[in-house]
Image (cartoon, rainbow over all chains, first blue to last red; front, side):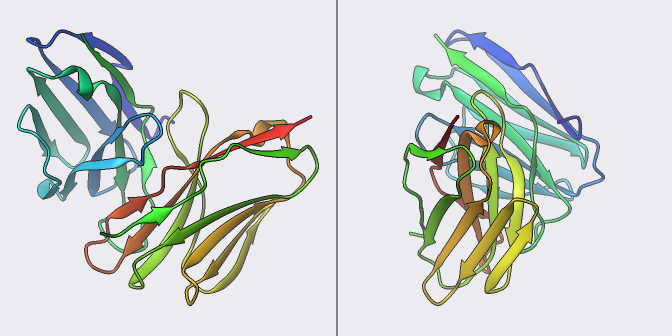
Length: 114
Length: 111
């Protein structure tokens, strides 16, 4: 669990708030990912960064804004969220974006939007 | 639409028995296959990965891949109560290397 860290672990915010989620990986990986996990549903890939460049944005609403200043850090900026955005947000990293590199997850941020 | 299907369960297995978890996938171009374990309230943890047809063993865990039939399975021998968790199957295709996830199978090991 210490290879990928996420803060905060829990977040409650109102629909008009602005907050940011932070992820840091200590594994020397080059690719980082944001996922959303809702109950009883498959993990939804939100964003992918490979060598700090965004390579994927899976039709995510603009109220979610990612930032990747370097290969070790990833942020998810949140603003004017909706109650249906309440979920577990997971950060992951991998050696690279190839067919064979496994992804390692952080502990997640449990987000509740009131 | 590329899909990965898993029975949601719960699958109840007595302690000491073999637990068998199955996963099917739709994209024949899939190249690599991963099993993750997720305890309630925790994040997914990688258990095993498999790339080639056949079996791959790691301790009490065996992954089985059959590309012709498009399924991958995970066997857990000598099941322990600590194996109770949700098991997620994930598949990578050769198109964009992103993981396609199943919704998971909840496994309960009964003492």
